[in-house]
Length: 310
Image (cartoon, rainbow, N blue to C red; front, top):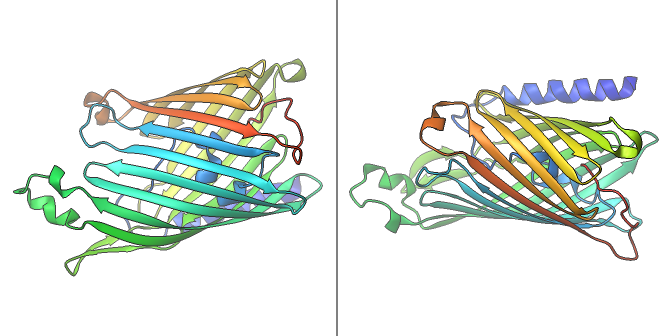
């Protein structure tokens, strides 16, 4: 346990050091309320952590009621590479904000070290993103039109992460965007797409006999260079391995209610609703997020008798 505490303290210090560097005005990558069930989108080292082929789809409608508000669709798949202590993954997402559209495809690879107390995984991701602008949606007399005066830009990116987990808890640090792509239009510099840093952790508390009641607590620190660190604190109570009911507090941003339902130990549905605690609550009716996850078992993998909570 002393080694684990040192790892946690070191990762936290490293995260705060990185998040305090640089200069940026706002977060640029998609955000997820159900990050704890969509971990590979945050950390490539999560790839292959299930004893199954895991398929996921997540759709997020942010700030419903505001024209041009973000809409994000994420599709992912990952699985272990049999008997190799490795995992692979694929993530595709589309993020639309007003006339701007950002599509990205990543390949993920993880190498896992099996320790006495758990598994320590190191991951890398690489991919290409395509930025497009629908200029026809803009007022031709709008002075801000020049800010998006490009049809298509293809930009590369790589990311890295480390993830430690066992049956009780997990901890991960990742930088899913390393390449700081520069956006230039007509020789004018409109800034860089900056690095993002994530520190995530969670713990399972068994409150009842034979996992009848399980409380999953988790946190996420999300940093973008030059912007305040965002903190999410979450708790989900699972009843009889079937129903999960949870709450999330995002510091100075939102309160969230979450529901999960396990149709089988391999297949579950998730839903989250964010209520803004800022002035935005007066001009929108909340943020909705829908998640679908399925584990495909074959002869190479162990049969799943109980749901995985992370």
